Image 1 (cartoon, rainbow, N blue to C red):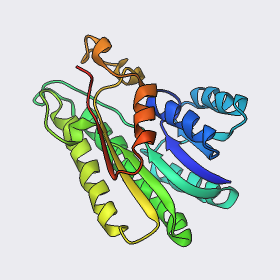
Image 2 (cartoon, rainbow, N blue to C red; image 1 turned 135 degrees about the vertical axis):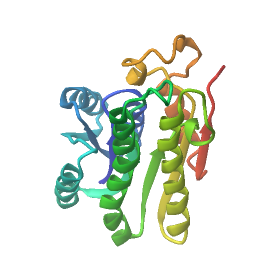
Image 3 (cartoon, rainbow, N blue to C red; image 1 turned 90 degrees about the vertical axis):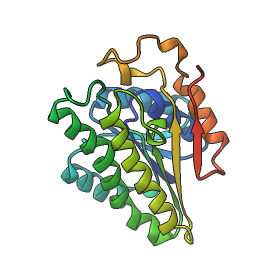
Image 4 (cartoon, rainbow, N blue to C red; image 1 turned 60 degrees about the vertical axis):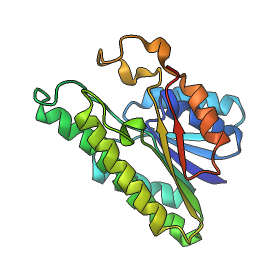
Length: 224
């Protein structure tokens, strides 16, 4: 059975994609920093007669990524990776702490790059597979009070577009997902979005992604 790794799979879009790929017959490797949340999603997949396993992995730590991929590569048939985990800090760039800028770069950019770099040899060996990078529309255009966040997402966009060219003549498909804000726990730690009613539900975004998998870039704007 082919396995797909999903980062940040404990809630939001990562959870919804995991449920859907489970229904399509894939084995899901759910990773994130909070094992309990992952186990809850795993139980939902198993309840639908799917297959999943959960692992606590901090993608800001390359050593944890390497240990996980080394184990997973021996135990499972690695087919895909969905780089969904991300963090956002918003507000005046002049007043943004260096620690917040560095955290976004470590998780949004380096985490995505290191995860991709770790799995690619397994996909290249079989000349098939999928890497899907969840980027956000902040990777398409700059926005007020999102300068550092947008910078991290523009970096992932450049990385993704370059991989698409690099692997264009292989069986490995590289997908870029640009979506507007979603009503997820992503916003729980800040007050940047005052009215979440204008945000799409992650289940809706997940359905739109799967319905457009023939495209290399999928853009899903906010409703309002």
